[in-house]
Length: 133
Image (tube, rainbow, N blue to C red; front, side, top):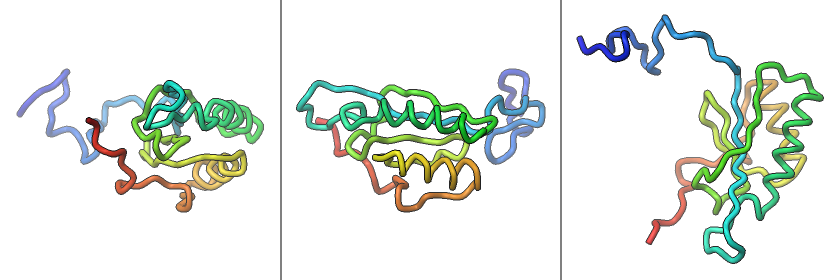
């Protein structure tokens, strides 16, 4: 058996979690890309598309709704600015393109409150930035 940090690799479940792991500190952790590139950059940036105001709204609205165990954070570049403003929710790892306060309201209600998905806003494995170079 290979032991890493005192836990045998065979003691991990399919998601890499050990029975001895502490419970998650947050039930959901939301990261909103607030990366800002120079004006005119070919990839654009989420901040130039309004992500900072959307993140502020999401944070305030989540508190108003009483969403316990949900943390909304600003993130640096999440490498999907072409599709942004972009955000990702963990632990699920679901990505969304958010453009309006209505989009935020829908994600808060459907994903974070009802544990569903807002498929019309989801970024998928097909949404990848062009090759760098």
